[in-house]
Length: 165
Image (tube, rainbow, N blue to C red; front, side, top):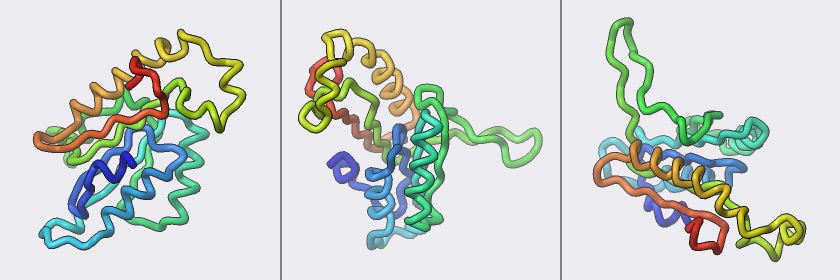
């Protein structure tokens, strides 16, 4: 559902801040491949980022099946994602990174998945969501900093806890 709420069009620059394992990224790429009358339709792309190296490796493996030249996979802490690209020439100024659409499907306590993850019952406590709230907020703030004016950001979790939502 979150990728559909972004309303991605083929010309959009899209950032998936917490992308692994990649099903939402795949939906974003499919949206980029849709019909467009926009002159810059071929310029759209998705940057799929994840902080965890092993999960990022899984994302790359999933992305190979898509064979899309419009996908870039990065392995970076989402709350510290750079806001500028390196200059194209020596001494040149770096270009600010801005995105038309950003998906923040942030790490969460997972209490919304208790039915399919019974082991979570044993690990769950009321401090679990407090522990991830600061991280979620930092990722959301970074996403808002990278959003173009008039762009759209969708924030989602698999939690039912109001602290996380």
